[in-house]
Amino acid sequence: MSNVDEPLYPIAVLIDELKNDDIQLRLNSIKRLSIIARALGEERTRKELIPFLSENNDDDDEVLLAMAEELGVFIPYVGGIEHAHVLLPPLENLSTVEETCVREKAVDSLCRIGSQMRENDLVDHFIPLAKRLSAGEWFTARVSACGVFHIAYPSAPDPLKTELRSLYSQLCQDDMPMVRRAAATNLGKFAATIESAHLKTDVMSMFDDLTQDDQDSVRLLAVESCAALGKLLEPQDCVTHILPVIVNFSQDKSWRVRYMVANQLYELCEAVGPEPTRADLVPAYVRLLRDNEAEVRIAAAGKVTKFCRILNPELAIQHILPCVKELSSDSSQHVRSALASVIMGMAPVLGKDATIEHLLPIFLSLLKDEFPDVRLNIISKLDQVNQVIGIDLLSQSLLPAIVELAEDRHWRVRLAIIEYIPLLASQLGVGFFDDKLGALCMQWLQDKVHSIREAAANNLKRLAEEFGPEWAMQHIVPQVLEMSNNPHYLYRMTILRAVSLLAPVMGSEITCSKLLPVVINASKDRVPNIKFNVAKMMQSLIPIVDQSVVEKTIRPCLVELSEDPDVDVRFFANEALQSIDNVMMSS
Image (cartoon, rainbow, N blue to C red; front, side):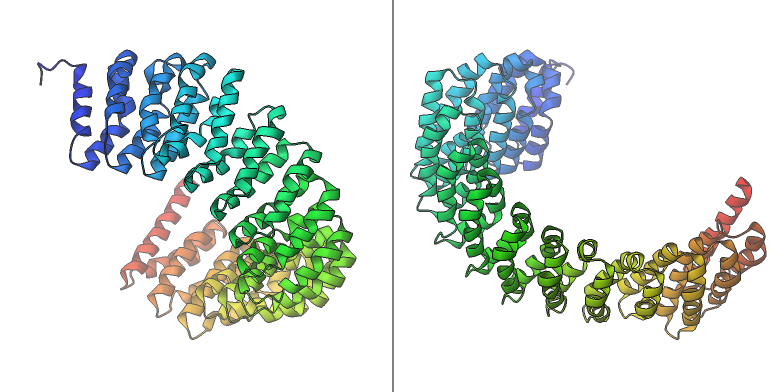
């Protein structure tokens, strides 16, 4: 080894490893390209490493993907921006391979490098690359070409700009649907770089070709361009060129195209302005809400609040609300679920009277839906309605439904209700809460599902924080202590958990007089799980209670547990004792 010329060694290793049959070695070597480039220096990287990579025809996609990614950040290793063009040939090769993810990464890296290149280098090197790719014999090159035009175009002189627009127009009419799809996907980015004089002519003619494509996969990508082009055009041009296309697309024979329209429609409303929205887009949206394909109704229902925000309340009540009523009893549970997840947001848009008259009945019907996700979506957004209609009306109309859901057969629904209780408590106030919901909170501590019992214990802590220790002492602590002798050990564990969460809120005095005796009593339990949880709890109580209580009550109990036959009980008891000793030393 010593007689090997040292600077040549790294490149020799790289070349050997790149030709190795073991893919992992080839991959590791590609991922170390930057280290090797630093070792070689900028000039040798340009003259030896990059040409070698251009000729490297590895057939493993993982290796090629890693190479495409590495080359995107390689400008500093080839001597900076003035030499960035040397990175284009290997990336050009990678942008023509068959594997999509390699091509996409290569195009990303080309765009990253192109956006840093000097203007004259772009004209000399990057624009010819875009032209070569767009004239590529194999469709993969033409697909990649679509992704680099928006980098090449701005710095091109006028004759070249005309040529680039013409080339992109040809790509929009390519024989291969994959190329037309790529052209449709990138049209918005390319259009953003084109002068406004050519937007209405060249770009709109490309857009028209794509919107009339016989492949629905191309047309649905053209829908995405509608919103991007709409933002570039003046409102009146948008009404002339984009609006008719969208109205046609909303009645397209392919449900996938209609689905894309349902997703994008509210963005177009902003582009065309209020009057065309009222005249043309509202009827189109109503059609989508009543579409015969459930997927289209799901997309449209999910955007109902965003769409209503753009309209004035009268229009929303007149046109959209009847559809919302129909969707609330839709045959597809997924449509009802999509509606339930956004319908609460309509309350602030429509205002108090319309919410009470029109939306409340819909909320109630969705709260009683047979599909748990629908009920869940309504519960999780109730606070939005409360801000609009006030707590009195909410409690009269929705509270009976909430109480019913507290015993729902699906545990996730019960969990959502528990998580909503503290918010409800703060809004209802203490008196109302005691009457209606207090008993429920205790009932959940004995639920069959562990997550519910855990959430119920957390809920008690949050209620104690909301209403204060005195209220908790009166309404929570006695009932919790009463349950501490439950015959089932899992329920006894839940009570211990509740006690440990309540202790910091209740303060030292109540903890010592009421809660600590329960914990001490539990340390004599016959179940080891209870006992080691007692040890963990005592450790958490050390900072809360006085030092004298720790020495007189907690330490003796832990000493006893540290001699328990069960190994886990001994472990946690010793940990807690160690914790006491640490506190003693620090004080």
